[in-house]
Length: 329
Ligand code: ADP
Ligand code: MG
Image 1 (cartoon, rainbow, N blue to C red):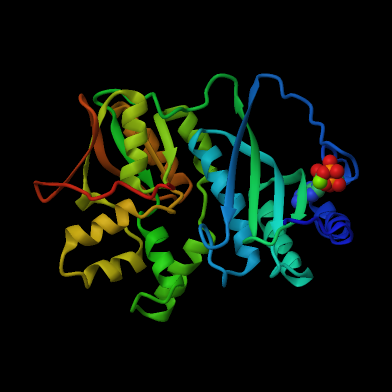
Image 2 (cartoon, rainbow, N blue to C red):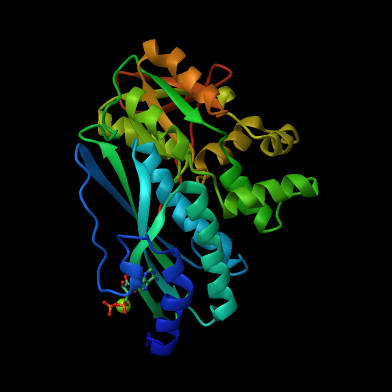
């Protein structure tokens, strides 16, 4: 039976969460609601994610990065839509392992990210559960009216791009579980990426200006491009040889005997939190300029064609995958 630990709940809110509250709209977390003014000329853009111990994070993961991963996965969704974040609502379902020090760690992770990404806490709920620790977060952002970039705007002839590197999410999970044999620094870099991915918040203005369709890579590159293809009523062709890899992923990749099997892991694994998007060919140069200005890697990996689904090629061979990405049953 889930129970609510009332004393712990109020102390948690007052001592830990209230200092993170939005200075005006959060009402110091002393009221029943948050109240925010509308912003003329803008749409309010909202997204929500839930994470559960044993499913989205490991029972051994420190709670500061659990909080950061939760916040960042939501910020990643907003960025892919071209929206800029300002606040969030948070529900905590603390488990037995979440004592005061763990709650402090959770809040320390949020505090660091509030500063890094310019967001603040608007409200939430706090309960205790006998099940696995779980958290849910709703992120709020603004986008100029009517410009939120959907999955459905890809047009035949558009090019397909991805920010950053692909595969560190999957490799990071392997690293965090001690299943990879690589240099310790590489393992650390990968596990860090898995625990606290870097959402491409700074690219949101470029996405809303230049992308025709966009999505963040959470399920797996192939699966997420599949969502764009389906929503847009088009096909997508990508060249796996162009998949951008981090230095650590490259070190792992170089030791594989079967490059296609290795790439399959990286492009179907998910948890990358990069932005995969389509854009008109005429905008490629402007996109590259904007990415460079932000020191952000940007790679053209394919193009939009008539048809449906995602077709991947490697060295002029068609590649078929067992699964496009991770799905919950
Ligand atoms: P209710 O009785 O409606 O559930 P609570 O006592 O849970 O209200 O919440 C009191 C205040 O604390 C509200 O402003 C709520 O938004 C805030 N709050 C509760 N839990 C959290 C949390 N995990 N994060 C942020 N704010 C929270
Ligand atoms: Mg409550």
